[in-house]
Length: 162
Image 1 (cartoon, rainbow, N blue to C red):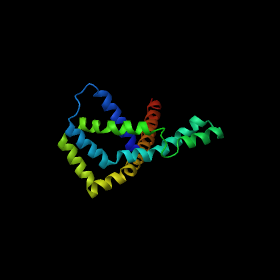
Image 2: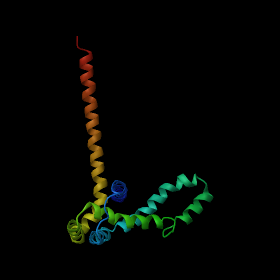
Image 3: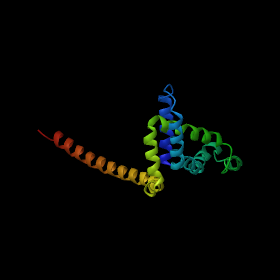
Image 4: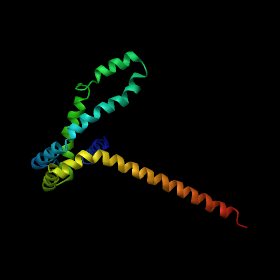
């Protein structure tokens, strides 16, 4: 899901920043659409939706069983409630890629992700991103703890000097 969130955030940011920019060529859009298909961005979005709906459920239902039941029925997989958002996102993302890369770069990226190593990277990227984030959090916490200890010791020594 993190890759999807980054993709959506990046897409929105770039689209806002480049709103007045020249439209990508049809060739660039074709290459970008092919890349987006290879990256399975639509599938990633559809796979992330159930988790998003679960997170939204307590906010909307507010622990009222009758609302929870209706909410579950309205947001069931295949529901039309989020179809327009998915379609809009899937239409906009190729423009993001086409504006960010040349046609040749798009083709090279797509060729990489079409190969076994690229497919494996796609399969493992969410787990790798989560594990990397955890490593970073752990390292930061250790650094904060160590720095805090050093600062406390240094301040104690400074205060106790004659």
